[in-house]
Image (cartoon, rainbow, N blue to C red; front, side, top):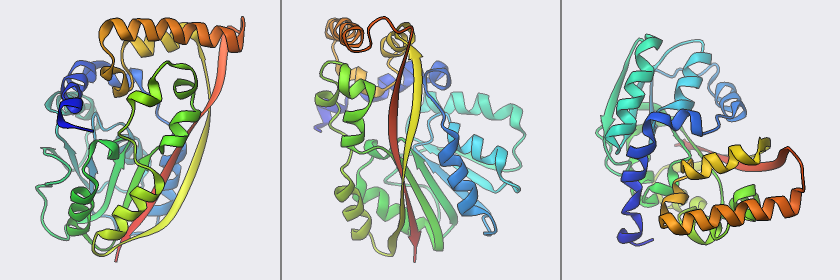
Length: 262
C-alpha cells in the first residue's frame, strides 16, 4: 500500500475515537488465552502497541491476579485521549501513555516481560516492529499478535457480501509473510498459532449502522458516494442470501500468534 493510500487512516481513527469501543466487538476467548499463557509467570512490565483505546489490555488487566506496569503505545493522539478517559476510573497501579509509532518504541532494551498488539499489526511495518519487539523484550519475554489473515477476512460477512471490501483491504498480512518476518528478526521464535472462530449475530440495520460509522478502517478507503452505493449493494446481497431473517448469523475468524524472545 502506497503512502497516498494510507492518508485517510489517521483521520479515520481520530473521527471514530469517541465511539470506538461501542462500534467494535471484544471477544473474551483471546483474553482467556493470554490469562492462561501468563499465569505463573513473573510479568512486571507490559506494552500494548497500537493500543487504540486499549480495550483488550484493559480486559486483560481486569482478569490478571496481579497488575503489572503497562505502556500503552499508539500513534493517534485522539485514540490515546479516549484511552486516558477510560483508564481514569480503573485506578491502575502503574501505566504510561506513549504517543509513538510501533517501529520506534521509546522503551529501553530488554525492559518488557510481555508485549501485545491487537488488530493493529496490519498498520505496522513488520520488520521495523519485530526488530523493536526483539529489542525491548527480555529473554524469555512473550509477544502476542492478534490479527486476521486475508483468507479469514474473505470468509467473513463483510468479505463475502460487502462490495469491494476485500479489494479495498490490502493491508492484511498472509500467514507466511507474518511468520517469515518474525523469523527474520533476531531472537524471535514462533511458539504457537491459535485460530479462533466466533459465532456472530446482528440485525441488518445494525450492520449498516456499523458500516456507515466505519467500524473497520477499511471503509475509509471508499469515497462517500461509493460507500453509500456499497451499503445498498450489501443490503441487497444479504437480503438475497438470508431472506427475511430478522437476525443474521455468520462466523468471524482471527488468529493469535505467540512469539518468544529467546
